[in-house]
Image (cartoon, rainbow, N blue to C red; front, side, top):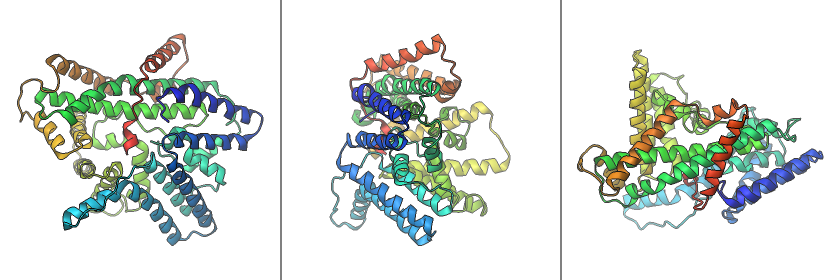
Length: 461
């Protein structure tokens, strides 16, 4: 089931909201949480019911391991459990990648098979690993199976994050006022959901055909087309993922749950480190807490720090997908982080405008590699952007489309680089008539265009 679907907006969400708060109003708190777990399972099973067994199985497995770790903190048991979680992720997401590469190196026939990646497996696997490690470290509070199931399966964050920690979520569900209808949260939540829906339907999905045409269908792209297509994807990915995040945070607020923010105006960044503090915040936080710090962080000398940075970003790249383009994308960001750290140590600083421009152009160039289905597609875009194809006009776009698309993308980037993001706006909302009309208008404009039901880009990761 998708957030951007009629069945979710018109039936699932109103029904789940009403029943949940009715149960909690009549002090059936455990029944309310159980209903929310079952609703979340239904939400997940709507996509493919077979993988509900995987979700349920991993929840039960990790809960039992956590119970054992509460009784005795045994490092071997933690290692076994983490390896078990990673093996599930590895089978569904990376099995074919490894066998294809082994076949390519050895010349033996490949034994790959078609495997459909379960929706959200990358997200809920990392979320459960964090719980196991925190339990071993003594940082996670002990909880029952119902609370743990709700922490993992809560539908607003199940399929594409944000990656949350148990100590952030479970206490909110068990708070004294958790079952009371909070109109401030509803107002802010509806605004965020409407804003996210608008970003996804009106902006991101409108750019998608141009991106697909330029990356996947065009044989060659001249200079202006290449820049238009690359910037279109830079905008599409931003508004698609930030739109999903807004919707997830908004849905959480409807149920009085404040999920961790995943976006903080990343296209306002003045350097690459700042970008990664703002883009996909919870993934960066997870890698920092459970990979970078355990490797030694910045505590074991300059060279070890740079190696840890590179290792962390190679992992971030590989987490996004089983392809060398993702590994290279992660390596390019890791290289940029290493260069930035060395530059920082010199004590020099770039002017703010130069830092912003350099960071944005680098990020935009890296997104080309992130999006490209093949090496040819990436090279095609890069050659066009560098003027190596020709400086002429369209092959995939008309002259008019070309510059309209460029103008729209530049305007969108300027908007994201200049104004407050939706989460900051929601916090400061006073629910005036003007704000209410704006929210209703965004929702209605998006709802009217709800006819394609395109999935969110990060569902692929």
